[in-house]
Image (cartoon, rainbow, N blue to C red; front, side):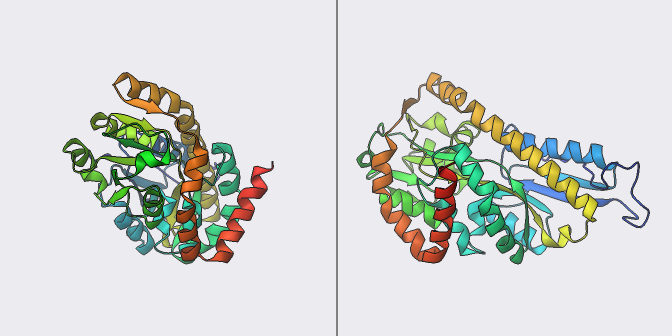
Amino acid sequence: MKEALLIFAATWGFAALPPAAHADPVVLSLVHAATTTHPAHLAALQFAKRVEERTHGQIRTEIFPASQLGSENELLQKVRLGAVDMDVTSMNYLIKYEKTFSVVVMPYLFDSYAHAHRVLDGPAMNWLAPLAEKQGFVILSNWEWGFRNITNSKRPINVPEDVRGLRVRVPPVAELEATMQALGAQVSKVGFKELPQALAQGLVDGQENPLNVIYYNKLYEAQKHLALTRHVYYNTLHLMSTATWAKLTPAEQAIVREESKAAGDGMRKKIIAEEEELIAKMAAAGVKVTRPDPAPFRAATQGARDEIRRFAGDENVRTFLKMVDAERRQ
């Protein structure tokens, strides 16, 4: 279903833009991969509504959910080229443009959501945002995706050895593949759109994703077991093309940033608050839930951290881990 929504970005709250700002309305596009019931889409709607209210109709934006305009890699490339204006996408997709971003996908980095947010909103944003801008992306704010967990149709997972031999679908992200391989899984690269059918037909045994992705995309329906491994924290970014950003006035840029952050904060609160509810709903549907001790999983995935270190570079990993440790002590 194609759903378009008009939004507007202009000045800080004046009745109208100065005539010289935009002679005609500017049309912006915002794309994302989530379903229309997912908190990401609700955040996009909030962003749209608030920007419209504050800017009095000078810029129009169409929202295209559920990867209507292409895969996540394709959408990000369109943003980079200026063919699409904004994208809500996982941080990992920037790795193909700047390897430094791979440090964020290391397994078992963060103690909690609050810990991850302190790092990524603070020192990491100051470090990574300029690197993204060099590649054609302005990071407006951090949104949310969540800690990743494993579902499968074969057996409960309580220790790393339980993962060994399972055919687990993993996104096309080498760092996630390394984490699953370190646990002994057989990695499958089924596309996300094909994943529900692949699970139902037994072409793969399981998959790993944040709880909200598992629930809202009904991936649990063909799975008997959910293990709350929380092996990797996945951050989502609200991005804008640098070409589009340059067309906005400073006042417009300020409004877009402020409302992006407000929408992202709302998405964070919803995703975190509803996790136990989603677990309960899946359990009620017959899914068996386990809560493994993370310590042996952290030890078992050391090889994945070493592989990411080789790819990202020792200096980049040291820089990021220093930020992670500093925020842990707060």
